[in-house]
Length: 637
Ligand code: BES
Ligand code: ZN
Image (tube, rainbow, N blue to C red):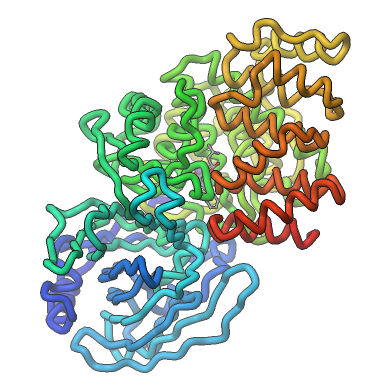
């Protein structure tokens, strides 16, 4: 199963040096920063066939991307050039790239000669975009002059009002799963790894960060702009190319860790993530060396549509996880864990996203255990388990979408890919023992580093390198876990003691209306467990009594505030409406925004009127990911 990383022939470097002479910028576009780029293998089996790309990597594939782009905050457009290194059969005639809305001005080869190209038909549904086919004519370096569309789905341009500082605009990108083809013309498939570099020009005083390593100091161009250079010398799936620009400052945490945020957010942000260096140390002790050099984070404005995104060397985070007590920074552990599961070993197709998210959710819980102790880890695992059961009860334990491996298109993180995925590994760990399991998982990362993987490979590797004998194989039910719907009977359930006190309080409230006197002293997970399990129907009096006693509407924890708003709206509790409106105006995180609109929508005329009024005001401020979800809800889908 081992597939060694091969080094690209150095003749390619010579070829690229020639290519550089024709670049429009004063310096070579493809630099010599990566003299011998690492080239990762691609997979060829049917289970590794990505139906969401137009690329034909077996014929001609991109191994390196060099971007030279200007950030135009007035036009809200990114434009410039992308130079691609190609690895192709000698007889390969064409290179097929992914594009969604890109405006192509010209395509040339390494010596500046025009190459023929054709933009195929645009498939709008699902964001697959259109194939951009380039006639290679023998070229192994291709330069594309282009502009991204003003409404590029990967990019969100924020007005100063949408930032904390209110003075400067902000830009960030979100590539996963197939959004990067709206701003980068390349083969946008998780199984086609590429090294990359970028030169980005941006107006002063904005700083630019990317998911690559900043080279030197920014160059002042003398026209009110600065040029920033970045390099990612390890092959990554292209969904991990990311950029952010804004009025941001940096503060170091440990020798290789630090955090970027707007100046007014930085102190709170720093305090929240101050355990990050400890987390990296814990993660390395578990599953081997952190291979990416630095681990920095950027706290984005609240419009960021996810909790976090594991962009290499620069995790992107929502500010909404900041609670003042580090109670939500399982999120940081999660994005950090992706440095192994996801970024080092990557799902070859999005139907195997559990290989990224499930393995990461398991790993996250192990980091939480190491840094914060087993009590917190077990409570967080118990919340995940409840989430699995709730989802299975909703969609049915035989629904095909509840298998870890899915054939369908990728849907954002349900209880299945994340939580069932994590409980699969937890179950295997319990059956074979932690020592053997940890050694196995570490070798999985080591032996597949910088490579794509499939469910079949994962299973095969477990059979080869973990499972001791037939009896153990029967006990594990690996195939059932990965390919069958529902939850296998051998699942390693959470310790019932994890929430014993809270569950008693839930019953006491349901039976006799007792308020839990200990609530304020509970952990965030305990508070969430309590709120999750309150009766679905609550009167206005009950809701205001709960709010009064537990301070729900005044909580500094957005996860808890979200649960409060959700239950308040489900019960048409008028006093909570203004706060829900304010929350939906500030926050663009899809995990919070979509369910709140969903609840409103389900509350008939009362809620739909509120939803329409609020959405008319907030829609423009949401990222395309969040907008797409709410649009569907508001269309009654
Ligand atoms: N990689 C995901 C975010 C993602 C998933 C983006 C699917 C696009 C498509 C990230 O690592 C993630 O899982 N974020 C979660 C974090 C949570 C589970 C701790 C989120 O954003 O809520
Ligand atoms: Zn994740």
